[in-house]
Amino acid sequence: MLSTVANISALLVSIAILVAGNGLQNSLIAVRANLEAFPTLVIGVMVTGYYVGFMAGAVVGPRIIMRAGHIRAFAAFAAIATAAALTHALVVQPATWMALRVISGICFAGLYMVIESWLNERTPNETRGKILSLYRIIELSAMTSGQLLLTTADPAGFTLFSLVSILICLALVPVALTKASVPPPIQTPKVRLGKLFRISPLGVVGCFVVGIANGAFWGLAPLSIRIAGLSVDVVGYFMSACIIGGVLFQWPIGMLSDRMDRRTVLVATCVLATVSSAAMSLAGSFPLAAGLIYGGLTLPIYTLCVAHTNDYADPGDFVEASSGLILVYSIGAVVGPAASSVAMDHLGGWALFGFTAVVTGGLAAFGIVRMLWRAPVPLEEQAEFLAVPPTTPAVYELDPRADAEDPEPDLFDDDDPARPV
Image (cartoon, rainbow, N blue to C red; front, side, top):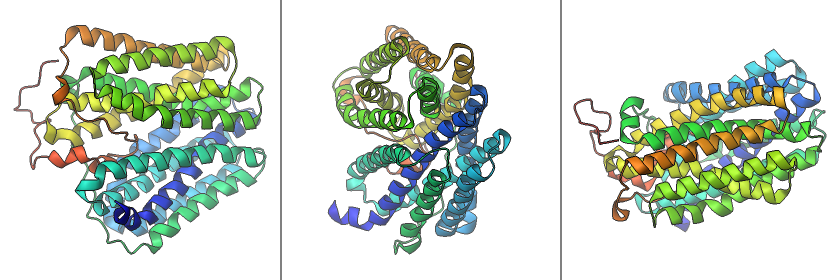
């Protein structure tokens, strides 16, 4: 294990720096847009633009990487992302920022894809689970650091945008200097959502719904806090508390889901997340304990949906199914910020948490219906829970559950009868 970590240490350092920069940038843009008096709906569309770009990057990224090579593609993506971050401070205009968010989304999808495919190539099969867990811990820790950096300077100035640019540039250094061999070209799995839905309606609907909730929250919670009249420091501390909650709750919730009907854990988590969101909306306050609980309950939902889907899918179809779920999650993340910003525009900043409460409550209700409609998977046949980030399909190649992949997976084979829904 230690030798594996040593071999991929440069890549882990790079992803930590990159995630910190991206986490800072996402919150900074919402806060700065509020200071510049951008309309709430416009800010919501800007957040949506990032996820649109991320989806596009997941499609075009493999082609660019194949053409230019991993290191040169990473350098190109990093250079464009750096320029985009600085341009936000130079041209403070809504239409320009919308375009920049799309560009940033494309670039970060490519950056994550390069690192995740490289990690997959450098990690032996016997340590994949541990490395994936380590990757998730590093990602969440770096995201927390990025939120705390928001408190270090005035968001109305140039400093924080410069800091984002510095971090993105520094993320290039470990990759550029690594001696690791270049991984093979990235393969993009073929995805057929109709077949995937027939395999697991709850998994597909769950990923879409949690994409709506998470896209809205992570993009617009800083704006909601600012509309409430609270300081930028509160934004940084509250968002950090949400991420820390995810770190603390994710593995206990996952282990519990391995020991009972996973749908029961999913529904219970959604119900508690709904109560947490509604409580913040009605109370009109942002205590750190509330952020800790909210993040701890909402961050594991995506992974629970992935694990539940793979409980019903054939073992050889893990990468194809999980890649489809990332796409569904991304579509939800595109919808969420725009829809919630409409609610905030009419009802105020607290409507964001009312919106997320309705979304997670709806998922809980759908989960109960599915439990009445379909028998559970026997515990001995359930897939193991592993915390995975909703980044790019390349991350699922690192998952040890992908080791069972067949040369010719049959989940999306039209000639195969679908499992009962």
